[in-house]
Image (cartoon, rainbow, N blue to C red; front, side, top):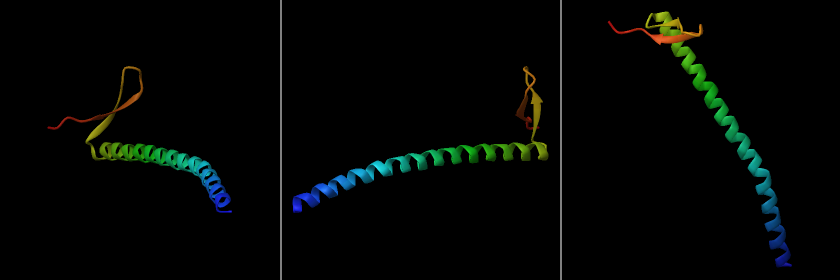
Length: 74
């Protein structure tokens, strides 16, 4: 009887691991995505504040797209 309990518990443990791995992967993907979104939002905020305060400006590059550029120190 004890052998059957050990086998069933071992089988249950294997099934639990199968369920846990997709959850871990989803949490990891969510963390990476939120980190990228937060970083992009932070960079955008810094750029907007710098332009408003006059420390930087938006210039047009050779292909016609706007490019952020810090002003030189005087």
